[in-house]
Image (cartoon, rainbow, N blue to C red; front, side, top):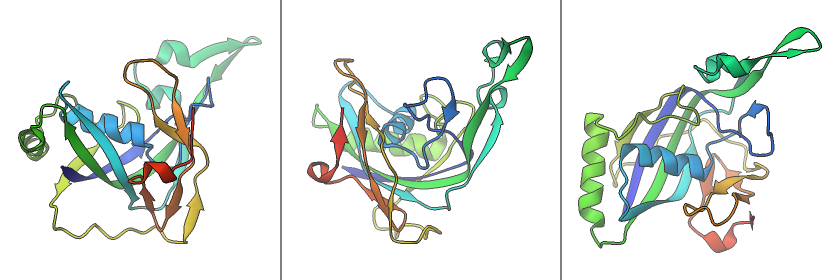
Length: 203
């Protein structure tokens, strides 16, 4: 069963895995982050979310801020003494993000319909399992469901194909392997993930 939600936030940060120390964001929300956002709203052991499409609604913009602002409660790890002086780490974050996430709800118990109904009620009422966020818990997300017959919101992203480079695709839930990366091409703001066989996967 296919479900679409519109997600927005004042700031977002989807940590690039190749940076061990620094907090640097991917340009757009990766499939793993999109799946985890849906799981904060509703998920059970009998179901899973499979991300099919990510539509970027707003131009990609980023800024720098202190890590203490991006990750509240980590102040003890932010300030480091290097050669007798304070070294305050910075975070690269996205500004004013908006996405439409299209996902398929797959239920091992054959109850995709009832699971979808619960998900929709939680989105409408805001009764989430946990507060949805865009990349970091400090950056809360506003989520609304789009009806199946509704036209997707217009986006401000144009310019034909854009190679986004290597991005995080997913991490096996059983911990049997490391993260999988993929190299998506965004076309007029849309990343189509429906044809897995056409994706360039690594890991």
